[in-house]
Amino acid sequence: MNRQAEFILIIVGASFSILTFFGATLYTLVFGINAMLMLDMPTTYGGGGEAIILWIFTFFSIIAVLFTLASAIFGFIGAFKIKNNGPKTKLFGVCFIVLGGLQVFTIHGILFLIAGILTVTKKEYQTNLKEGEGIKWD
Image (tube, rainbow, N blue to C red; front, top):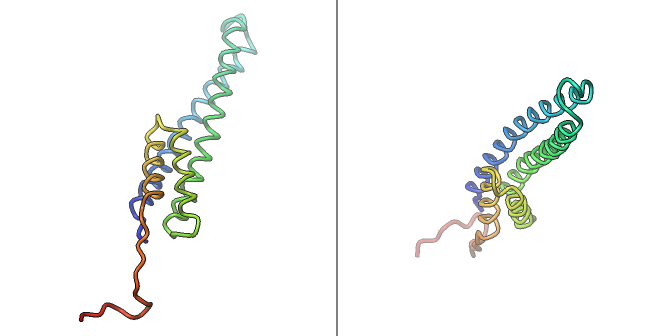
């Protein structure tokens, strides 16, 4: 079965996920460096409260980095599994619905959600033709 639309949606979603990974990595570096500077010289840059908040931001940005990297890797692997139309295509569709639901407020989450719904709801048509028989015009 031709799953070209799902393949393109997932590839574009995984590409956006890679771009988000680079942005989240940049934020992690900025928050981490600022948090280390706060611990090094707390009287110059501020008190301990600001350092704790920066460490919390750093922690959540590290989680975002890991999640977007996992999302991108799963997106690229899943796109080619769906393109090959293997036996677990519907399972990958459900996984993309869950992954898109977790990231529903991002563009790649919406693309994963749409591709997952298309994968699960696409009907498989069976033909009665045998291989090599061709079409008979009677």
